[in-house]
Length: 266
Image 1: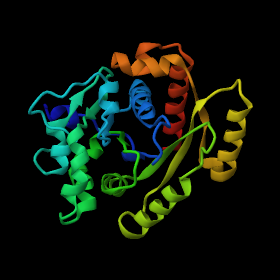
Image 2: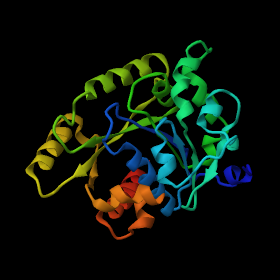
Image 3: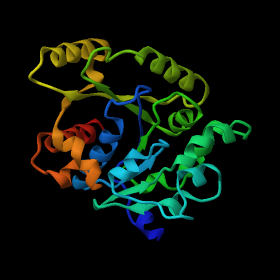
Image 4: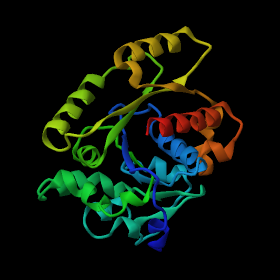
């Protein structure tokens, strides 16, 4: 990876590292990372994606296949490669990705005995983050050591919540984890925003869930809601964000609108 791709850009404002997190699976977390990053890139923001989920859905969502011997975020955590070594260009100008692999599943065990085990990602980001406007971390659907690394390295959290029954189930545990991280690892981390996903305007259930989430989180909930659309579900199989796969789809429009809202929040 040519390091000039990282270092030529100087953000107009301090960079922001955002952990996209929910310990529940199937809430649109990877979909949000893939498509929000693309929409930010289309708004002339330089974005680094770190795929921190062993399932590597964000990596495949950009059509990136890691060849044998190429470093991933696992090698970065292990200290065997730098973030620059593992960086890939994507199909979207200004958007770069550090891929995941199934090897990341073993990092939880391997990090246990390491000094400053929760700080490995933060250390890897030093000297790199300031060359991007945004760093988006796709966290695994758990609250283990990998997720703690993401939270220790982040300025804030973006929480996707699906517009379905039990939407807030487990959120209190996530907030307890946030409080523990603030107390022990990263006192400055905050909630950047809460995003309603899989929203179906045809059902009263989605409206009820939206009301419940807004009552719980107040102004931290984004005005933008992400609809449930076929094109959003199809796009990853083509290795493309929805803004390139189906530009005029409601899902693409929603993520472009969300990007503008993210930019306004700083």
